[in-house]
Length: 316
Image 1 (cartoon, rainbow, N blue to C red):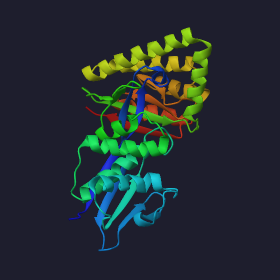
Image 2: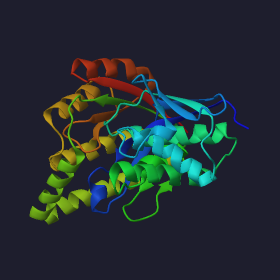
Image 3: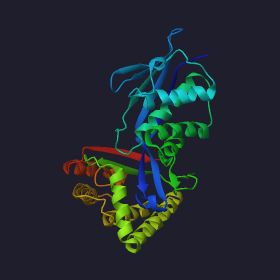
């Protein structure tokens, strides 16, 4: 029995631990609920097969016609194929419409969220629920098509909609939030490939292992303190931890004039803390804000040239 269904998946943001995580330290990522992929499934006429409507780009794709070299195969077709293969299910007569508010290519988990929403809506339409662990494993397989050897962070944060604490080579841990807190995510408008900044930090470490190793170790301490603060509801401690984490990332040469201006603007407007998020030199900064201060902080960020400002609540 095929039925109408709806599913959604949030974005994600790295909160603490960028770059040091590549060198064995922990990092924390959290769900970004203010931006989402929404997916709707509607039964279709007998024999029509599975159709995917990508509302954001005004394109329609037929499951049965999509070859693996198709430009949208990995994003739109492969997640559904994986789920159908897992269920040993033939192609259903179904139309799936997807729409996303997650910026693409900004380190906010758009690919994993799209895969999660597609898989979930298909399972719901077929009345074939699967445990979150299985959905997570399927989305991770999609991430491997996109990224080769991903950390598993994006899919885990997004599928479980919980913060994730991760150390390279160790099992990912989800953990609870005792008290909700508000973040502003400001896009610098600058594209900066993460592999370049990661490579530059590695070169810096090779040249100055003692100094840079000490920076990595301190970032690890900050991450552990941040997890303890989030779990215990001591959100007021996060701001100073964010500021110190950002200063250490600056020492690793992955900040930039634009990111510095955005962080300073957020702090001057009342943010409790601010730091770059992700690979650095471009991409996003995040700012911790009291709910009543978000408008003035967002205005200050836009005045400093933020291309986009997203307000989100990381909920308990």
